[in-house]
Image 1: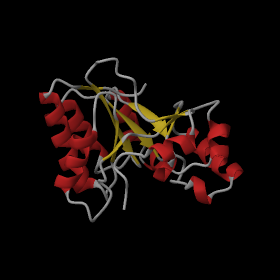
Image 2: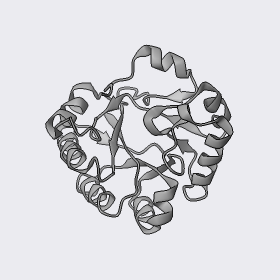
Image 3: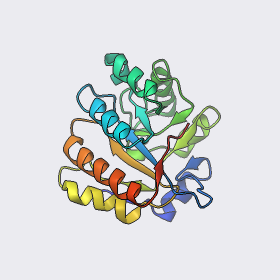
Image 4: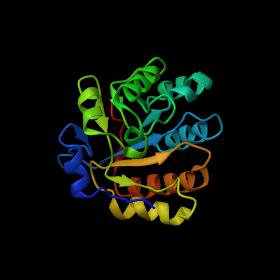
Length: 205
């Protein structure tokens, strides 16, 4: 079970130090993001699709995956996309002591050079936000595709995005093996739908 758009109470709980969308000032811009990579099978397919549509995106990378597949991480950057810290091994902030969590983020930073951070599962304690906010822009989202959910068909993932994204939206996909089928379908559909409406796709750098 997941919530496509974060409710007001959740935003209030996290406070003003967290980014949910990007003020668009009337421009037709969307910000695609990909969590949990890089993956040697999935990420290159994402890069090819983005290049086909002249789209830029932001990849929130797991440090452990970057250590395994540094060449894929390099490809992401060379294609002009932004990268962000997603902890070293997908750590859950709610279930992790603050010092241990910050240590995990720092370990990821040894492999991912970025001032952007997204907490896995979107779960972060206020105390952890305070500890991270001096060094990172903490990026959440306002549109969740649900591509990782095995009970959500690909068509529904696409509709989640089409029905909820608007100019300035930060949209979440996952370049993981679990999400592959849903993500590739929804990503292609999203790029076509919004490109036809005159939108451009930018990274968060």
